[in-house]
Length: 430
Ligand SMILES: NC(=O)c1ccc[n+]([C@@H]2O[C@H](COP(=O)([O-])OP(=O)(O)OC[C@H]3O[C@@H](n4cnc5c(N)ncnc54)[C@H](O)[C@@H]3O)[C@@H](O)[C@H]2O)c1
Ligand SMILES: N[C@@H](CCO)C(=O)O
Ligand code: NA
Image 1 (tube, rainbow, N blue to C red):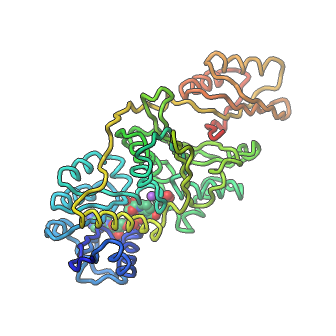
Image 2: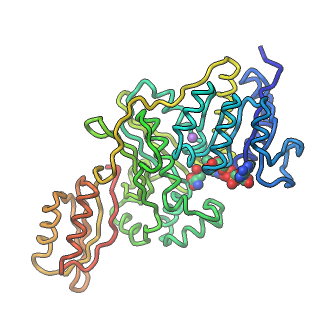
Image 3: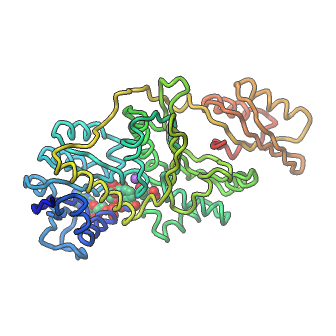
């Protein structure tokens, strides 16, 4: 039976995502009502600046007083698509205190202080859903939170930032340098005016924290995630990867340790073989592998950004929390019972690629190999390219800790025969 009394929705923020949420709520109102079991009504839209023409939105609903809207007392669900930490956090807490469930796309806030929001949701008996916060439209958090709740996830590995994937893809396909590829991403509207959060890896690190928390039932914040962006990736690095039939991708990697007692999360550029499924993720798409004990490897792929795709995830959450409201229940809350240690990256092991410019004379290879051996870094392959008396050694190691590799590089730099070390990059996916 369809309830005739509508569920009231307050929209906070009416930018790229918010305007698409409002549009779909209007154009798909009949279907949404049928799926929920009650109509949903846009009861208010909080914006930063009033007076703008917002297509399809009744100007009478628009307010700059978000707190006033939330304190009215008749709002059932709040959709937060402002972004950033404050005032988004304050608004979400006010909404929950007044009995509203919350749908948010705010990865920065969830990764910094998800615990406070989850605690408030539990205290006030409301929902907190945020599928749009990671990998946009791709259903990923619900599968982790619900579909895989009976399995044991060991690893989550993926491309979770569209802007940087677009830049690296262009560098690979055209040979462009980083700055040139960033310009193109900006012109095409992929990169924001201030692209720092994307290119320095903050956006991906926030997403990695959220993924690790859900995957391992452990609180992981953005500060726990090791982070390197792509600003140091050069055309030469990409060319070097190409010569090894590999591509450079910005990866988010969340792992359970072999003994199962700790987890780690890291975001950094890495070389992966061109044959790896993540290598074929082009332009601004996202893709995430989830490796779990019983299910094996699952791959999630699709648009990770953009107004309409992100709104799709928001609307899916909206339907879910409205259904819960109607049936007087809430969905799963925070699951952090495992409380595993979160390891620093220095202890995480990966393979490394590096280019050493060395003098081309007898004994050089042995001296270089001795330094690797001294720091317990085992060499997998060495390829030598000669150049007028000098040579470049392209070295790929077996798995080593970041700390061991750094110590190796430091000592190599001190050798008289080593002219330069470049292209230091992790190697994943083999
Ligand atoms: N755009 C995407 O592709 C995408 C994808 C996934 C998640 N997200 C997340 O969605 C959220 C919104 O992103 P967006 O791309 O729509 O950003 P946006 O900048 O286009 O929109 C945010 C809107 O909020 C408004 N705003 C700022 N402060 C406000 C306040 N105090 N009260 C009311 N409104 C206020 C701004 O004026 C702006 O219109 C962010 O958390 C973002 O990380 C975006
Ligand atoms: N800036 C983000 C938006 C989606 O979260 C990206 O490029 O992936
Ligand atoms: Na998603």
